[in-house]
Length: 69
Length: 178
Image (cartoon, rainbow over all chains, first blue to last red; front, side, top):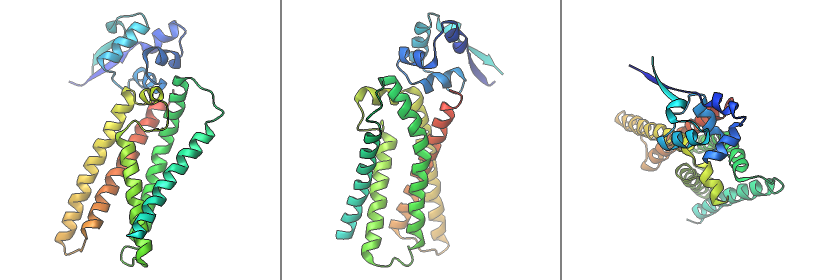
């Protein structure tokens, strides 16, 4: 069964009033990488997911979830 | 031999000239590391397909004269220029690119998404090279004469061009809606 990684990154980021560039700078990647993760184009590594969770003050499970299609 | 060397040096001089122009254009752009990485990342996404077009157009002029090479010196220069450009592009494909930038900018430019996109581009390039090799091999079964040099030329050109195009497409898609 195909699976997809859903995320609430954009929602949380805008709640905190951060831009993609600011979040990217916090986790040490380019804005492009944050954009692709938010859009579901790119599945981040565990390291990046943990960094994003820390930067957004949430757990990885709060930000990411697997959806079965 | 002299013609090959001249071609090689011309190719390398062209690469150096491009690097100097790029540096000169950036002289009045004070940017943070992140801003610079973003700027260069966008530029790389635009450059990749353009480089593929330049690389492929170079092959058109090469193969259009392959059966009537003309003066040996011109032929040698063309082959050397192609070899120099191929080596530079292969180096660009397998490294962090932007060799004259600061290390921290280069590290940021080679982040997770970029590495994934580049790997995908390289995968496509490898498969295309193999497909081109099979096609050339099949061609020789039907009495077509393909020299070893031409075969290598075709296989390398196909692989490098497709890797550049695929990587460029993925980078552009990643930047879309940003």
